[in-house]
Image (cartoon, rainbow, N blue to C red; front, top):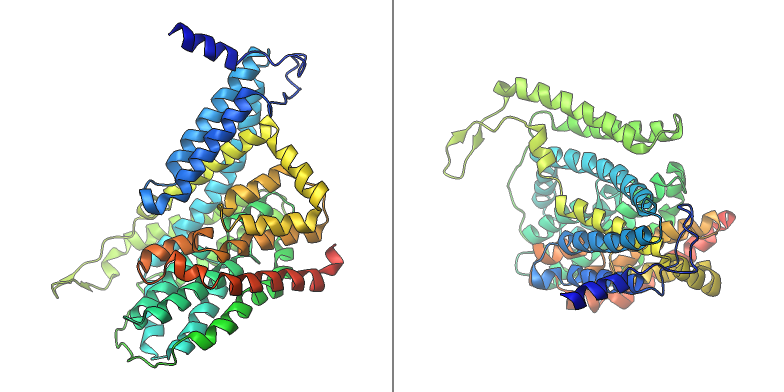
Length: 466
């Protein structure tokens, strides 16, 4: 026990020569025991995140623990150096960033769940299946729809919806399902890159105020290139087969179209609050959440107008009343808590001083273009959320065109591996055995070709921003 206490006291010894005790100063802990331990803790946590498919351990759990341990060690060192409130001030700043993004995402997720409850996505899926398209037609249709739906809905929901269509029509044709799923992942990630609502990373950049809402659409052409180049090459490997059409008809529930309109109105409110009133976008999203709450109250009070549903046994049953808080409960809480853990853990590493070192190496020694391309490649291996948050925390001095570039690369770089994005990981579970890591990896060079082409097009068509 004495040995343990001695080791603990050495771990948190005052860092002499690094601070005079003023709470306004920061300690350089990059060479300190706490800094090294924090790197180890974060690395171990992220290894568990990356092995989620094998361990079945939810990705939020290791990063939540890592964040708590890292900040506890930081706080202990600062307290021992006469700055007991320095860590508190820093962590509150990180927590405010998380709170804004979490509430924004929570509203968006609730709207998506409400539309799913009203069968908006099931209706679209059944319509596509009934059309009797051939595999090659369906390959392009699901890709194009994924590209244009993901800027409004998130790329994960979009990918799952399109994959359901592919699985229904593809049947036992594993080759078609594999190629269509790869195409969907690439298209959903590319579509999410030119909209603040398409991916968490673009939302982070927008909420930081680095890129205005309208400026994201300058990435439209590079995003199209990122999707079309690999899709055009894969097209010739898609089986030229016309499967039998399904005659299943699914109709939207009462209020579905009005919820879609309310969602668009909520987006417009968030943009208007940010652009014209200079308020955080989350305030507009929370105002839009009230739209859905009032409409949900109306649906609940008029529940008697709902059309009875046919159950599995063929009997007619009354549908459950619309409950807005049930839709909130069905949000992707694991993703939101993962987001919390990442922001706090990376924020802790930044407070230690590691992000300054990385920023100096990447954006000064390598140059911003090389560094931003590397960010996209890294996001194929590590989740793009911590990568983008690290870049935003570094806040390197670079042109507007370079900020647009890193937004593009962080959004589409994850397409190069199936584990590089939430859409890819989700589809591996949904199409288990048909869409696999190895199957995706065979087409990585083709996807990388689209990645490189999109960067070249961005440098060409958006040259005025550099």
